[in-house]
Length: 517
Image 1: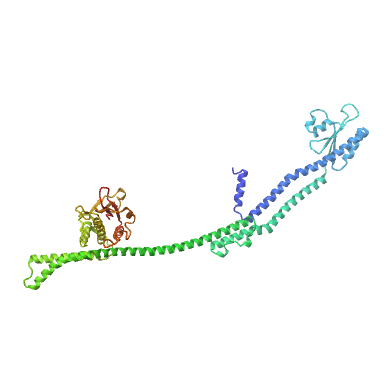
Image 2 (image 1 turned 135 degrees about the vertical axis):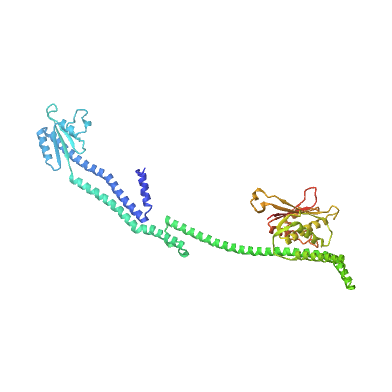
């Protein structure tokens, strides 16, 4: 396939692709000129030769006609021979004489000899196309007296003139094309091809270098042709690109502003969330204040009585059981004060392994200080269940959940009855195979607070953990408890879920799911 014309054309096209436009046009001009010259030579040369041969054949036929006229006038072959000698003496004219059979075999087309008869007194063109064969018969019978002539005429001046004309025509055509090519190269192409291409290249260079004032092709350099359409299309594309860049810059500026605004709002939201937790803690302390006073009265009364006894008789002192009683009373006051301080104190989160049962007991102790109806509460959390958490924050979670359960039971039509009960439970769930490689094996702890109150209103479920999502905006509710509890559990990477109990059982169930690690 390497030698086929298609392969050669492909190699030539591949070679031209490496040239610049001016070199390509020069190669094409030269190739076209050479091809035109060869075409003219191949096309005109046979025609010119045929014209000359026809002229020479006409000359030979005219001389043959003269011999025939001479034969008809006198009928004497000697006179015809003298006329032939006269013709032979003419320049560039040759006459061969001989018997008809010999000359016919040498000069005529073999197809004319098939019949065995030769035309007499009639000129016949020879096989070379320029000579004329003529048989002049004698007055005697038979062919022995016939004389044959082969007349050839050469016209060198005509041949030279036609050749010069042919060369001149070729040169004129080639020169005309060369003139057209030069005119295109000097006047047409520089203005309509080279200059627009140079303008596009300059504009592209300015675009790469960031010179925005020069990145568009000037209107005065744009022609009104296909090249101009390309240049205008390029200018429109660059303009659209710059417009999109401006829009992108505006969008990025807006995005940065939105990001800053969102960051500020997140900061404010986090601050508000912490404030909600503190507000809920203060509200809980307020509700516990009356219970605190009641709890303090009894120990203080005991201590007051003992102190009065010592004041009346300092020397009597206190016996052992009385001193032990005073010590227990003071210890109870100390524990009560520490519990209140721990609950009220705002400390940074600190995760440590904590016994969950003790956390629940501390929450129940704080709730006993609140005034109101007491609802039986069972702490069924296993004593050996230890979970990494912030104990102070988890106390606040259980205070809120158990208080909500107690308030829900108190709102039942029958109020607190013998079957009223709040249960706090805990169980460890084994991890799945997917979490086998995680710390702690992917195990979780599920803690639940269950009551037998009226349950959860389905309309409140979507907004249950949002601030102020409560129907008790009075002394019994702040609207912050569940929101604060859910935030604390989320800080521990856990979940707080709420749902009504299954059909047949009254009440609600809040579940806390915490990772073991």
